[in-house]
Image (cartoon, rainbow, N blue to C red; front, side, top):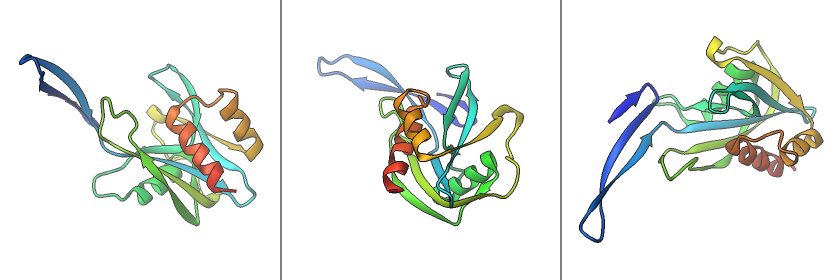
Length: 166
């Protein structure tokens, strides 16, 4: 077993039908949230941030890890505020998914936050610099369709948010 602050690498010995065995590796991680926020004038609050896995910026809703003892709803509003400086008046759950059940058992909880308004500057570390990007419904749809938004969980969360927002 190898661990990092948010990830634990777990090795499993799997018995095979022929009597042999095989090693399978999984990752143990906390649950995540993705919080799509919408302002009263109908714009969606997104963040542009560098993602090390692809060594490039992505455009996505605010999101991150759920802290121990924290509810997904509280985590979603916290991540929204930390990454964008926006707060919301209400939050609507949009379900959850397993991000990668081949390797992980954690879930990504998705939310649509209504009545978002800027309350402060983003509260992120230098390792997680974000740029707030406000887009209207048409621009968001176009970004989903033309491949501007490539983060799979973002595509799903934003699609659900569009459907839920009418």
